[in-house]
Length: 249
Length: 266
Image 1 (cartoon, each protein chain N blue to C red):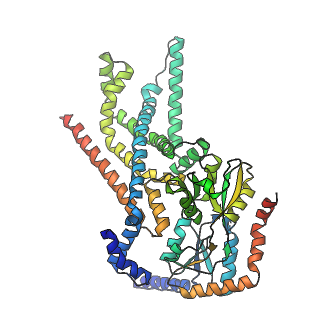
Image 2: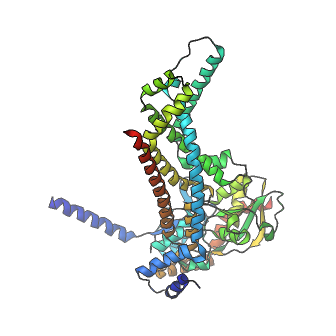
Image 3: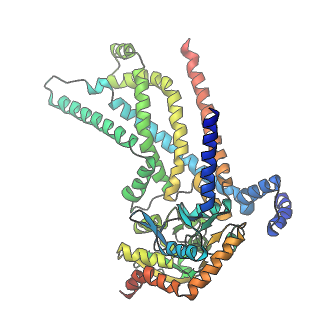
């Protein structure tokens, strides 16, 4: 019996040691946000995924992906020192109170999706209208600022908001520009149009736990190198070309 | 400035300077951020009100529909074969047998699929392009779901009533329907009540699934506040306590009702 316990103990210790040695950084993300992160053939892929893999390679750490709802990403990062959030997250002052951000890596901008012929063209047209957005995103905050909390419908994923817009239950949906472009290109629904109302947008950044400044430094250094090497443009060509085609049509 | 804000000021300073908080300061920070600041407690009450509305009407409609389904599935309805030649009566029994088959099919279908999918299908499919209040969609989805469970509970209750009661009613000159309504169902309700209470509580909690269709009920209120304050779980605890309050009130009421019904037992 004692031998058995000793063996079990040794085994557990061995295992923990093995885990501690590798210690991959956990990437929290919401893979329902093409082209930034989405699931294709059972794999999580996208702009952010390529980017963080490149960053990890430069900075010399392993990554492990952990999919969840977008509004859970930040609390996951806050709770775990070794978790980072890479999920098309805009850098905002309120979020900065709770986590640290890397340097911004892309400025996406917000666009408004409306029904063809709705006549909604500028920001003021949206006042008092029912606007849909994904809960906890900058689109959500922008919608609330424009039309008030009572008229803002928030969804678990922005796709559900688009479905309700198609069904005529919303007047508009606010979403990040590349995401909206990719979506409309894929949806092929002529009843929806994109309007750029010049809504305030923020840079996307990587969320890092406040108690892990070493990791933040490594990530920032890697981002700087990648930017200098032209990797951002490479990614843009890879993931936004469908959107450019859609715009040209 | 309210007293709550005065208590908050020193803690806010600590947070600003990135000083560690002790347990009580942290607790107050969580409560202040998630319930007091910007009058956020009102959002929970709004959510509670929506949950209450949806639950109340869903329980009401679900119980009515469930009782109808239960009666349609009774052996006296299913096993009776009309051997006469009257064409109208023949048709009538044919229709009843169809309803019985439909009730079985409906119960199997609803019990065998997740409520979340039913809600999503009803919202994006059935009512996909109709602009109606989400509260109504929530009531419809929850009532349709609950009816299937209530049907089986009520059927069990009816079957626990001695067949002699039906025979007595019929020989006293009551019609079949009147016997069911005034003699059998009241007695069935008494024995079904504990299981029904279970189902009602389950229904109240399951309305939380409606947050998926952007209905701002109690769970969504917590979700919403969490997306603003970035708290890990405090809003969920507040929402959870309100659910508990709702179900405890319901349980107490039903226990009282049970006691009243038992008073005639002796």
